[in-house]
Image (cartoon, rainbow, N blue to C red):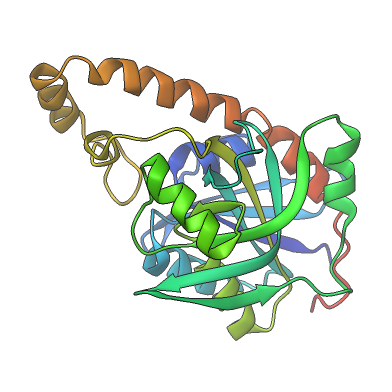
Length: 252
């Protein structure tokens, strides 16, 4: 029987670009979509919404569907000053922040497949292994990202990877995470624009329109964010293609 790889993606755009088409099926409140990779391995992507709670629930739902591995995919904020928009990061360590504490959630072992990483590297995309940290609240300003890097040495920050790693630990499944840098460390994202999407990642159009009327200069930030998001996700098709190279020896 062909294996199924389950992946949690927080935002509609992340799930759509990874799967190659929009997620339409709904189960347990989550939109999900399936695609078949080149070796007939199945890829099941669940659009979880933002945050630890949503990501953990989506990952557990995937584990109950009998997937052979759990992964997390999406854009993230860069913490290392050397990372640029569009750089691809495979997690070798996942850290989780809760209150003021940072703990180790997952660490890559010797049995972890390096094939998807090697596959992406051969395509000439900027890619590296490194630690990722997941936080409870978004780190939007450049000063906050620099401080988080100094404190943890994580290369990128998001709000979901640690939750998916915890679900994989709980379910006894292999885990991996692929993050693509959207906003580098020196880029600040206005809090107002972050509030223009709900926790499922869907735009709040009337809220956004009202804020732009009050402060038209937000349009410049909005266009910049859209450009960075599109640049980051341009690598998604390559990531999907390379997942077929994954060897999951411990799959059921």
